[in-house]
Figure: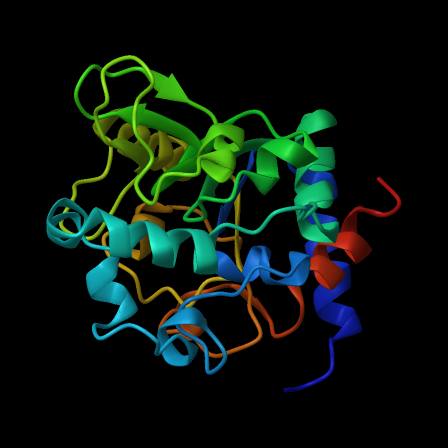
Length: 250
């Protein structure tokens, strides 16, 4: 991987200082620096979790959840739930950009809630969040603390006994219409679009960036993506390192 380019950092700093309509689109790579594994990299969940008789992608599907919630929750708790994790430099930098009025929207594929923990407020969670959970029978809501402390192999509603489901978008489930509408509108109106920590291989989420109509598309990612040739500024480095550098003197 090439070392970070000072000219690229300088250009990104300039674009950020000049703009008050920045939108960020991010993926799992934003949270890996907090100790949360991604999905598709060499060391990601899909390539390292082998103790189940089916692929992780299948376990994270709606049909599998309905068919075998006990195995789903064994995988969910052991692989996706990370207690004690904290926002990293990327989360904090994005929260700072929003606080000073430059970042107008944050669109994330992550479900870990670290952007909220860092202080970000206008967030479009394309794949939902583990922080919200609901009973599939009566709709009662439960927080993450309840899910972690539940002794049941499959968490059950204390009101009606129904199965509780995380408010995350599983495979085979549609994205939320209002979230889609808000995210697309934010991207269409953005002056600067910063994309970070994502392979841009997950659809329909990755297709959202095609709505950007400006000429300041920034892509920050360690590995190559299908959109490398389409961006206006490409930086191959740590998302936390880059965002920390460009926001330190704002």
